[in-house]
Image 1 (cartoon, rainbow, N blue to C red):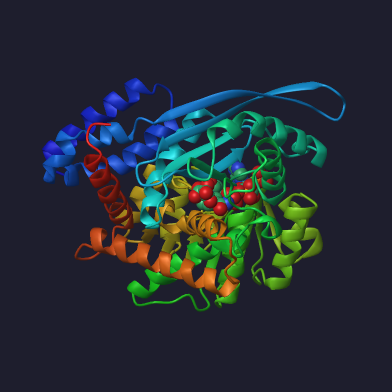
Image 2 (tube, helix red, strand yellow; image 1 turned 45 degrees about the vertical axis):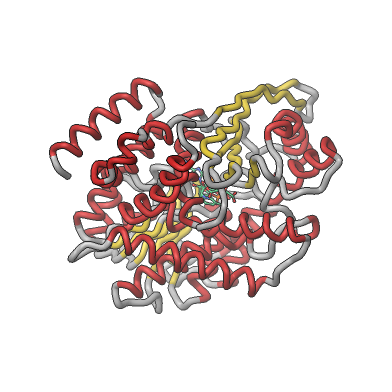
Length: 450
Ligand SMILES: NC(=O)C1=CN([C@@H]2O[C@H](COP(=O)(O)OP(=O)(O)OC[C@H]3O[C@@H](n4cnc5c(N)ncnc54)[C@H](OP(=O)(O)O)[C@@H]3O)[C@@H](O)[C@H]2O)C=CC1
Ligand SMILES: O=C(O)CCC(=O)C(=O)O
């Protein structure tokens, strides 16, 4: 990076940190983008003069609200709900809802900011947003989760709509929560519209939406390997997480002939040297989606596997890595382990799972690294396809949706290569950021001063 780019970057980040004090995850997400974009912006004066990056890092609006509900014992509980409507430049706000005790404004701003870029990469007309609450669904009864979702939606409903803002799931918001949220939306508005995605198939959902993020991530890995003259066959894989993204990432890897060695949750990692096959994965899905149990139980069912309490998967030797749990779950030392174990590629199923220091280590070793905004865009892409099907009042078959998903992931890969190829390395971070930014920035300039 030139001295001028460095100076501009420093100045920009100082301003951002001053305007958003203490929002560490938001700073991290913006810095990763700004490092890629600053030289590009300096080469294109219209973006610098138009102060596009400054405008793009200021959300259109943030809604914060009280969510009051009653638990099974009749106690009143109070949580905080949020919706960050970050940018509707290229389409209505679109992005998931996260229910997790760690939810904060910083986390939702980082997620909403990333979402603008990810959604741009899909080529669908989707803006960026994110929301959620510091509510912990773990250990709550179905009725408690329902009452919470109904209270949450009672406020959120006035801010969303099929052409305004379309939430979906994320951590802690799966099929059950979407059902309760959409049921309340429908009741309050007396209308059936595509105002939420990830809906059950019977009430307007798209086939393949549950699978889309994990499958899309594997399609992206396959493209990246193919670009490097390799393939997935018999590759050993580390997958973190055991939720929606991790389950379907593992499923597609198994289908395509790779060997999944690990899955994890916030308690620890299971390491199955024989590989997690379809039957074992079905058991994990039942454990996580129905019984809502802990991954540690796997070793009781499959005693040859090991449970590594409190550990992440990254110290285990394997060819490929798929962080699919949460932000900053892959740190500098983990990256060093991956590199010393000759890991060939990292494809991020989660949002910002790797720290900046980890990415630096991985890229310096010329290991393939595909960032979440490119690698996990399949989920929101199929949400976009769900919106299209809702508007057209039709359902596409699973094969049709899967083909479209594959096409979108291949197209994202091509764009990353177009903007990120250098002599000896494909910089997918730079490629994804510039490809996504150009479209948003040109649209912002077309709108004038807004
Ligand atoms: N669902 C989707 O379509 C998309 C999701 N993503 C991203 O993928 C990631 C996973 O989302 P999703 O699978 O939907 O969520 P789920 O809630 O289905 O699963 C989350 C998984 O991550 C684990 N996890 C959560 N927090 C932590 C933590 N602090 N430390 C270790 N493990 C943790 C959970 O373990 P435990 O149960 O113990 O908490 C669980 O196994 C997130 O980053 C999300 O933003 C990105 C694009 C689309
Ligand atoms: O499907 C969606 O709208 C959003 C998915 C999501 O939250 C994400 O891409 O991080």
